[in-house]
Length: 143
Image 1 (spheres, rainbow, N blue to C red):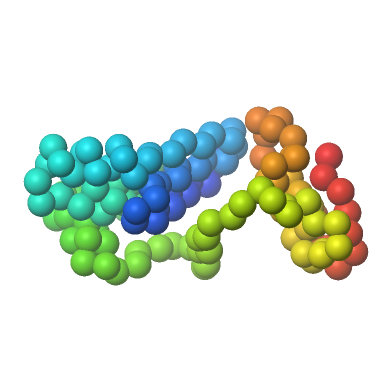
Image 2: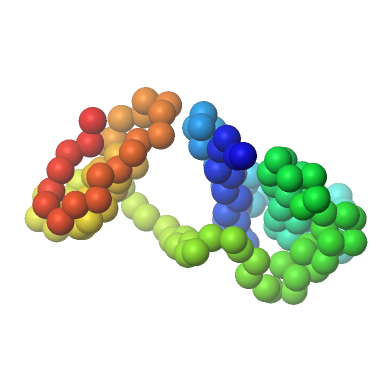
């Protein structure tokens, strides 16, 4: 049985976000750190290495001993991602850049995810807890 969800989201040229729920923990690996790693490891795609090692860790920590990956499988994942393949267990992943200007939606309501967008916006509270958004076709507010 799992206790937490684990997300590793990478975008080449921007970095990697590592997110764990229950308890909420987040970390980033900057593009600069990844390129420094690549410089010290010629021929290695740092993004692919991060993804492969993260997948190996998730497989070994899922509470099912038979799902652990061996080194050949880890290298296979790294080769796939290095070659440009998208490897994901997510049903969808959306990655984009945003700016704070205009974030507080006065006239535009983004239903049904308005409460989640307000929580992660520049004026949202940083409580250290995972905000459970309410999906609704009518506006609501964050805590």
